[in-house]
Image (cartoon, rainbow over all chains, first blue to last red; front, side):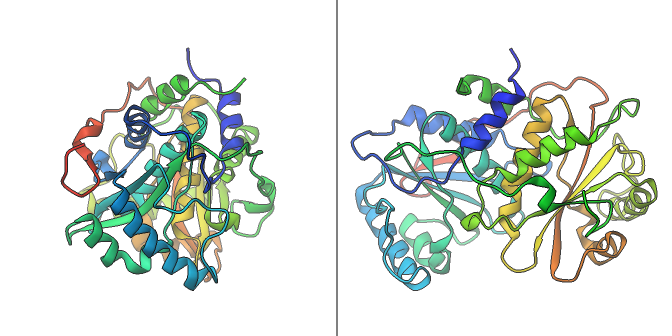
Length: 184
Length: 184
């Protein structure tokens, strides 16, 4: 049966960026594989599918990435992260990559499919780029070759609590008709 | 009732990039507004919602944009577009914009929400950036101010025919475990 658009709209309105997780509940490989399949269904330039994914569960690697993230959080957010599960404790980190030439924007629709599917399955996650200022160090930790760029790292886990719907401006506030500035 | 993940996965697998439309069927404003609402539900940096949308129906403006698009198609695709509705005839073009500083990648999850919602409603569309080499001319046609960047233009209409499911590589071909190159 085809998906009802009202059900999809409801799912969109419930998608939130989740940064704190219930650490008593693991996330199994089968769940991660479903999320990655959702990601790979996204439209992408010429269907070249230039994306690749790195699923990180190793505690030592997560801890090294946490150090990078917390350093950048200190610089840009004015302190260590608060209300955010430390990356060393996050059940899974997923790095989303593409070739340095040509892959860029195509990964974001894939990331959105992944995070929407996670939300519908009751999981939480968030797209992070705060570590990007230290991408060379991150690539070294993960053995990522020079010609590949890491665009996003997504912590994933079961949410620590229930979250309400997201809050957005009305469409009419961000929409124009025919030319810029003309009211919708 | 919460959305069933199987239904969402089915919808992902049916999303295709649609470039040719049934011109006997108009697309009304209420439908476009639903798509834009889907777009604005997407996650975005700090919930700043820096995106804006321009819904283009004016025949003269669409024709001017068609001239740009066909020029670039001639350069990059080796000829005028084939199997693609000319932009002057497309029911609606939606330009997706953000401030030149800070807005960039956040628009792509929004575009994916819009195109997925369109697909579930039976509509077709595609993300185009081929015109980007002539962005100053496009901005001039649409009166877009200097500090705003146009990231994507989406032609939208009812598909000319039925399309099958998309085709993608298996997840295991594009996924690594813990470090780059280590098999999933």
